Amino acid sequence: MNRIVVPLALLLFLPLFGLAAPFLFSGSDQVATGTLSHLWNFVLGGYIVSTLVLILGVGVGVFILGVGNAWIIASYDFPGKKIFEWALILPLAVPTYVMAYLFVDLLQFSGPIQSTLRVVLGMDSLWFFPDPRSLSGAIWSFSFCLFPYVYLITRTAFLERSGRLIEVSETLGYSPLRGFVKLVLPMARPAIFAGMALALMEVLADFGAVSYFGVQTFATGIFKAWLSFGDRIAAVQLALGLLSFVLLIFFIEQSSRSKLRYASSTRGRPLAKSLRGKNAFFAFAFCGATLLCGFLLPAFALLQLLFKQGLTIDIRYLDWLSNSLSVSILTALISVALAVFFAYSVRMHARLAWVNRLLGFGYALPGAVLAIGILSFLEIFQLAWWMSASMLVLIYAYLVRFLSSSLQSVEAGLVRITPSMDASAALLGLSKAQILKRVHVPLLKRSLITAGLFVFVDVMKELPATLLLRPFNFDTLAVATYQLAADERLAELALPSLTIVLVGLFPVLLLSRVISKS
Image (cartoon, rainbow, N blue to C red; front, side, top):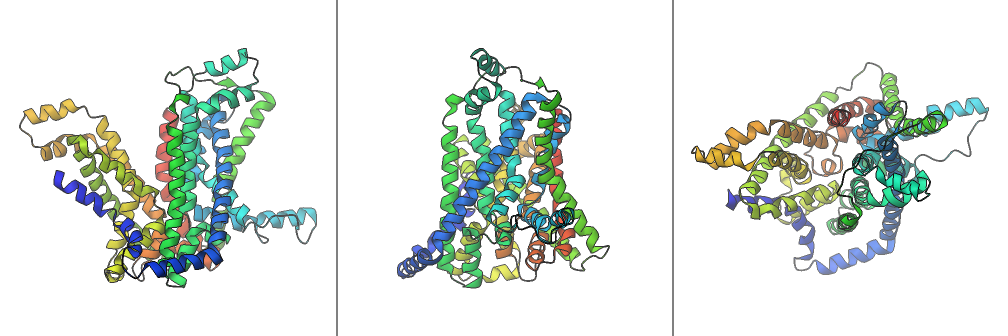
């Protein structure tokens, strides 16, 4: 087992070799330099500016929504709190590209909001109404879709902070707001940065939403370079540019974790003051408006599109559903098996712990970067025909991207199994494989189901890697939704989009159940 772990882990890092390969072969340097010069002169500056503005805007948005709601829920009692504390994570079930389509449909000129306002105001056009299909619209959409990452982690940090902090701030003459800014917020800084890093990496990895909003980012540039111009060098260089943004965010998040002196090691009583009157109304209104924009309105728009389509079902829907289910189930099963293998290997040989930390980097790879790395690797060895022959390349990409999520779940389950059980089983004459089969796997049943569920949902929602790596005539629900939106056939995307959202609700409801119990 020990001899297989490292080669198998390195096999999952071949996409990174594919990104570096064009610069390692002779004759590629001049081509790469010329392509980079062309990109810099014409498009690279625009990609950098729009990407920076997007992540800065979304960063501010998820900070306000995530931290604001987390502080209100963790610190105060008011009517509706029991519902909001779990319902505020429901936007995680809506993929970013689906949120973008529904956001534009709601706010465009022919949408229900502008139509109603024109009737009420008696105007033919609302000149003051912002264009939803713009960079600001993308920031708004991403913020309401991704703020639960910040909300979940920050809420836990606020609950773990001692209530004495606010009491101390009151004795110092601080107002509740000043005490929050001066004391509580700095102590929750590592958690806030962690949640924001997850949200911003999702923004960088997205292709469907930014392309629909018409925002020119590195992700859209990668697709143009590869699919429209057939320029592998340009696609690889743009993928490396996007990867540099991801590494920057990852570095900032890791740096924030190193400042653990801001964290408290003691757990105090949770601060939960009862709100009455206008304060209770403001707390309810803030949480309610967030939930309305982040989930209720998109769900309403999705159901409206579904009713507009009527009872007719696209004959291709069953093929899309079958393809999505087949790759999702197969990837989930393989991912869980690999997660058990790697986690158990580290348990038996602690010196291999670096392997699992290395595998965790795969989740930080945007789907477009991962796909370009794989395509570049296959092209070098003349193996691109594999993509059209089977879905093995696509499943491999999913494993590289999502193995870390199942690995974390399995590792968390193994930690709860005391090593004395291993020693007792060994004294009874069981081999390591028998201990895994007869002791660990039965105890890990819940963790294995959770790990498989999260990988299943992630694969169902994945768009960029699927668009680039799928076999011919193999469309999933995510791909079909994107193609229908690109053709402005919004009514027809209702059913595949609703299917993706319903599937995404399973882990979200599971998570909300844990929150409500805690």
